[in-house]
Each structure stands twice: as C-alpha cells, then as structure tokens.
Image (tube, rainbow, N blue to C red; front, side, top):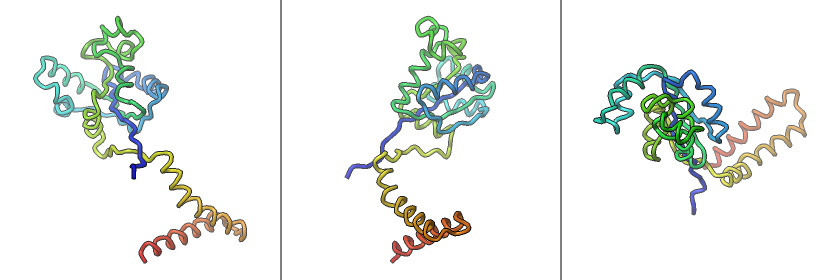
Length: 201
C-alpha cells in the first residue's frame, strides 16, 4: 500500500544583518510568492556559530569576512515550505553577487536589498540536504517529515471525527442541556473512553 503522505519541500531563508531593517517587506514578498513560513526566529549568531553554519565554505578566502559579517548583527531565520521551495526561493534571490545581480536580474531580492558579493541581504539553501541540515541548525527541534495528503486527511475525518461529532450533536439536540459546551465535552470524553477501552480489549 502506498504511503498516503506527500512531501512538501522546505528550505531555509535567512535575512542577513544588512537587510534586517527591511524584514517586514521581505516577509511580505515571501508570502506573496506562495511560501508558508513554518518557523521563524530572530537571533544573533556568534562567530563560532557562523563558522559551523558555513562549514562548507571553510578555507575559502572570504570565509573570515563572511563569519564576521554574519555575526555583526541580528538575523532572521525562517523555515519556508511550498512546492519546489529550494529552487523557487533561489530564483527569487538571484545571483550571489548583488552588484552583478543588479545588471543581470534587477528584479531579484539580492539586487534590491543587497550591496555587494558579501553583503547580499539573504541566504537560501542550495540543495535538499543543505536545507535539512540548515533548518535543523537554526531550529534544533524541527522535524522534517511528510504531511498527510488531502485524501488521507479526509479519510481520517470521515472515519474517526465525523461519526463522533454526529452522535454528540444528535444527543445535544435531543437533550437540549443548559450548558451545551460542558455537555459536548462530556460526550467527547465518553466517546474517547469507549474507543480506548475497545482498543485495550
């Protein structure tokens, strides 16, 4: 039997220190581009944390400048989700070098908000594995797993939730109690106890 869950791709977005003052404007663009912001946090990384985050860049000439810049002020980290999230976010970001981006992709985010190759305003994961590592780096308790498909969700509702609600609401209409909310809570408790006892039998 096929797994009824579907994977919605996720990526990490960082608003860097040079663009933090434009965070609301950037978040609005993110949402209008069809992304869901699953997690968000504002933080300031230490140089050591920046070195760990950019470990794949270690040894390159710009590495000390990169870690110094990324630890120079607060950043905003966001876990974003949508179909084809990694490629779509990178296409919106544009080229890494903001100066070149203004020449070749003037409408991209790095052309608008960045100032140089180093201070390019935003970060986006480069691959699925990078996204997984980076999201877990910024959000330690994050669990990256598939969501239930629409069909699986509808099946769960029709099998388990709707019958319970129907019985409870039918009893509510029959008895017309003075406290409908309390009555409904008691009915749900009774239904859950019945299901639990049945499963344990």
